[in-house]
Amino acid sequence: MSRGQVVREWYESLQSGDLESLLQAFSPDIVWYQAEGHPYQPGGEPWVGPEAIRDRLLARVATEWDDFKVDVRDVHEAGDEVVAEGRYTGTFKATGKKLDSQFCHVWRVSDAGIIRFQQYMDTAQLRSVVTGAVSA
Image (cartoon, rainbow, N blue to C red; front, side, top):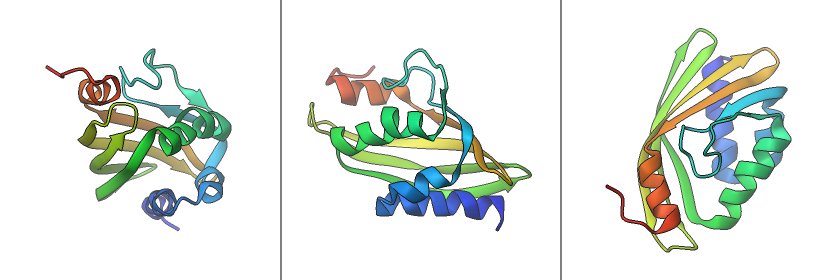
């Protein structure tokens, strides 16, 4: 299976809510970086391991958002790296504000599975949705 297909299948598992497949795609020591300034990890430190990603990201998204979607528009393979472009949409329950934001994900995939993830997005827009503040 190509590295791009590994990432495409990960997104398909995300859309279908198949948590087990999501976590199985990761290597045991995956390093996951949220975009700088992301409200779920404002310090920018990575999460290491599938359980950290499950507990600090996936579980929160499942409980804090309505109709959260990751709409992947393009996937590009570049050696061990895979770049995905798309949009996040959803409504943050606590504020009732809607998110519609572009993203870029850079994945590193090896024979052991997904070993690294880096997210790029407009975190000021995300913070305004989460806090209810007006973004600049």
